[in-house]
Image (cartoon, rainbow, N blue to C red):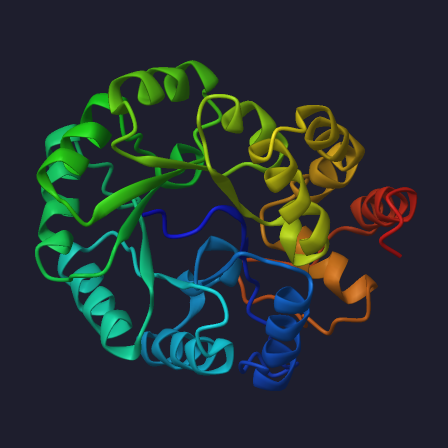
Length: 294
């Protein structure tokens, strides 16, 4: 059974001016997402800035989200890092805290070989029982899970059940769908490729756009899965300029700016991420106005 179908939000982590986690704002964002029809909440994924958090902060944020969601939708904890032992430790902790599943990014900077990727995921999968979603985002990590490797991992690790595909390589995803033959659930990791990936048998998206448009992102997926491809495509195209603006600077710089424009108090970012440029803020604001978000 799939961890979720539809749109899972890659949730931001709001900070106070002193860069501490703003738990009141985080709770408000959680409630906004659930009221907006989000199908899953992904905490401490890339958009949540876990790479600038301490281990204790990550654990605290994961615990908080799990407690506040209280089983209303699945909570998927981002537990990947470039050190396999640390990824195992964080994965085991997230399981203990009650996460429904894990999102495990490929080990960045080390640039593992395909054999190294296989052994990395196998080592993590052997230590936990809950489902694992592999996260393939070569533009940020420097390594790419080839379809053959993804299928091998799924075949050897029964709790590795899905992949978030953010390679941007549609030909690769076609091959993955062919080789996987239903063995792996495929989630789009790019908001501008949701409908194309659904057409290849994908079952949803792990989305940055969902932070500001949860209902429409959910509807885009569900309309497609329920057979109204024209309506799904209309939503995809209607939000295309917003999506482009959300990625005109490094994620999550623009989405935090977008939430702040909406009065949602996402706060600032931690270095080395910086505030969005004034020029790009203007582009973002215009796109959001045209989409009726502000």
